[in-house]
Length: 328
Ligand SMILES: [Zn+2]
Image 1 (cartoon, rainbow, N blue to C red):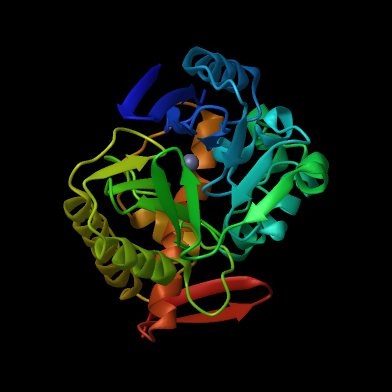
Image 2: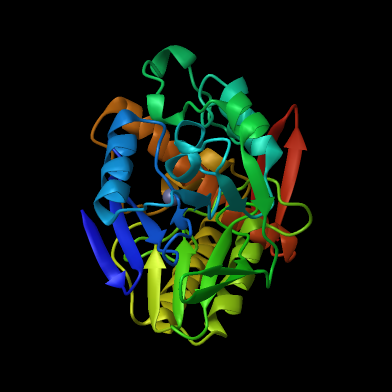
């Protein structure tokens, strides 16, 4: 489905099979006659995503071709890049998380291979995980070697058609995430920083000194200070009340922190034990999905625990590569 959501800005639904996200919203920002358009986010490395993207671009009629902007490098946004970018395509993005892209290729499955799983009590028998999803496989070599990346930094401005998009660095959902803000139209292209009706996954990847949740909450504050009349998220419906959504997301994480503090008050526990005691809204429909959701849930739990550790509200003990946590 394609919809001109604001004059010169088309929303394109890209199917994301076998995920609770259901679809990616890609956005086509139309350039002036003879100028290239810019396509924001792409979809998984799957034929069904490529077909949806190409037919939408054709229907809109991007005659001069398009450049690409990635809000971040997760496979549901960047997976198609090696397939659709040509030597002529400029690829705008935030800081490129080389480590994360490397993981896509090195690990049989980028989620299951994470070190933090074992450290936190998630002992998975690899035989349990039979189907490596195709959508997570990306041609990393091509992605890193042949794409013409142009990194954007906070405050950089990208002019497309009648709009002047300002880059906002919004670390949190992942490292190097960016949003685009158009101050005259008051439109925010939010990537996975703010989503409609679902909360963005905040997990426990290494982001230097601050926890990912701390960075995420700071990035939310940054957006809360802007005058936004329309949020165009990468998943689910556009939002007209940005501030209310931000308050909901802040409340969601505050509630999660309280929930974990209550659990940690019972004494030393590993990450999986804590995850198992928390309330989750998504429920798996098959064994593979169950493993995947556990990984996401554990990552989310640890992001909150790391926040408590950072602010001295919890403590961790580690021996033999196993971690335990309790309330301080
Ligand atoms: Zn996404």
